Length: 349
Image (cartoon, rainbow, N blue to C red; front, side, top):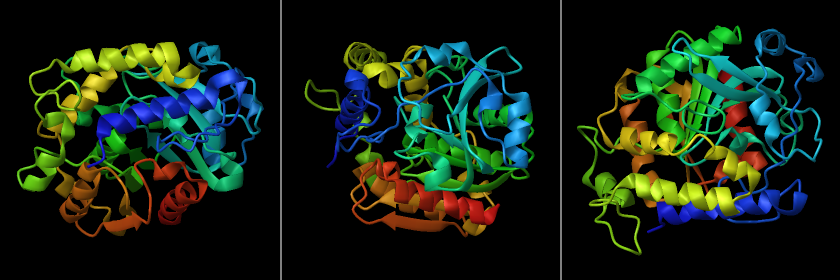
């Protein structure tokens, strides 16, 4: 069985390759989700980004640029450059994001131990998927976003996204979530039915504690195994110790992109770990998007994802289910696969 922890470590190595030696493009072919990332180039002036759609112009007028994001090494200037911003939430927390492309707005959520930079592809978005605008956020506790408050839930995240959409003057939008970001996208689809036009759950975790979760799904959660020196299991071990170890290693050896993911500490990772394994604060069965909801999974994905994806599809009436042949857990990094995902949502907007 593919190891979730091993995959996360391989992602760190891939990101290290992507940023080592000032290189703009990774040459690594690791199974990590971010192989082949472009180095981001940031502007502190939103007018530098071409604005050819109503969504782009609305976003430009309402973006609050975050200087903290400009601290990354940004040697490569691939045009058009992503625009960086922050949204101040009602409780004072900050939600960091970047915007790339012009067209149908898709708010994107990264996976565990990652950041919004996972949505930067090998090519500029306007070339690989014209007519789509990605709004990629650092989820709470990652990158430039404030850690989540005590008791944070998927439901509260959906409300944060609604505030961000208001900030950007987006009455309707699509959502996409990869891996541990999948449940966050699903929460938006369930709880913001008047605003979410389409949803993509990409190699998403399923609810291990769902009343109807199959036994095989629970058993496939490698983190739930008994803790051993060589395994992923965390039963009998403080998960903060693992998260701190991963953060320290990433800060020391992972390169600036991976270090960005952990800059806020380990609370984002711990929130993901916990929320996935307790009863979810929303019901999958409340998602009413029908065929505008697609569950994507790689044919060679992690075992828990291969088991959980059909279960997600079963829980969401009328949803579509797509298997990417040969795809690993990071299959969306392939520009063709990402374009297929985004274009499908665009067709439903």
